Image (cartoon, rainbow, N blue to C red):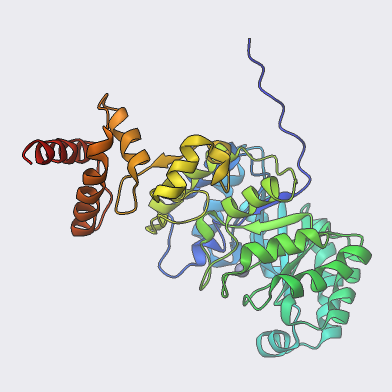
Length: 385
Ligand SMILES: [Zn+2]
């Protein structure tokens, strides 16, 4: 009997916020059935924690949170709250076990949104974290706009959160203003000195959310906030599949995720969000393990390691050779071989030309059937000479 290898215990924990920040994508709105299906798919993929909604949005959201939390999915279901009594009360009715209590960390957001100074913000942490603990929640504190906050204030915020009994501090790059180097510099001192687990929540305004998340992990963050397909405000959040794949393959971290489930998970969320998975999206896109260029295909056929980046087998996928404008004789011989047709040397050059012409005219790759027909044409052309 074949034994299934045990999944190593996670060293980095994924907190998926597709149902909260992901749904904040303009134009995206999940039904209750879609939310439940996504939560179940995340649980099946081994995601240990999801941020499933914002109770302050009202009864419908509270009902959805309650439905997800009561499903017994075996993951932590967390609600996003502002640092205040009304949101904590709303979370009680949502039936979740954990809350993320968010407070602005930058002076700009503190003064414009709440009219508070730093000392008053710390006071709120000292008041509301114990209130949420008394209500029976596990409590994480979210530092909104941490990337534009004074680092000294962030350290004091971390201290206040730890003393008040929070189990984790989220550093949010709310406006996507960080690069990987600044992310490292922001996270490292807090991870070193706070005694709290640190979560990083990145946004992709400069296309750096995944890179910044990895930098945060390198700096000591143990929790990563991500969404399926990078859904989220503006340019989106860090992408679950990219972050998980890079953590496992490039950084040697264990996430506890079943990476083979990621492509189907991406498709499920794409259907529910109405945002198709781009063909070239890393890890999950249709074409990211497809190869056309003659030089690359010849190398891959001889030894897959020649031009392999990420290993498709990790994600339940495989290399696919497509025939198109850049195909060489080796790829054509390989495609024809699938139909038991042998490509003779004199025909090969003519077939390469015919394939090139047709692919350019149609502006797409060709099917094997089309290649077989062009091969027939190439043979007939040679005989007619
Ligand atoms: Zn966000």
